[in-house]
Amino acid sequence: MTRYDAIYGAVAKIPRGKVSTYGQIAFLAGMPRCSRLVGRALAQAPAYLPCHRVVNHAGRLAPSFQEQRELLQAEGIRFRPNGCVDLKQCLWHPFSGETP
Image (cartoon, rainbow, N blue to C red; front, top):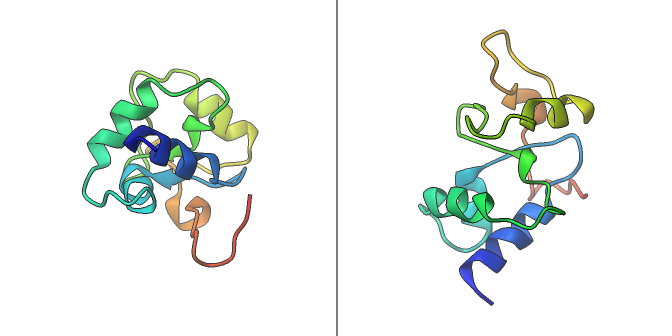
């Protein structure tokens, strides 16, 4: 399994209506502190992956992913007035029993 495969496997588990951070995905993929690698992998990800559910540690969206906000809003993701995802409400907690 490649490092990208591990990243894609972690992203595939993010439930609808939740988001994860690049750092969280790196940790779940067994590569803590490799959040930039996650970003590079997602830029090349297969179309079926829910990459729109990955945001930065502050809830900011990817600047080059124009459809991301629309896709998240369609899933009921809440945004704060500053345009960032409301992580208090929408962050996925993979070890709490939340399932896809």
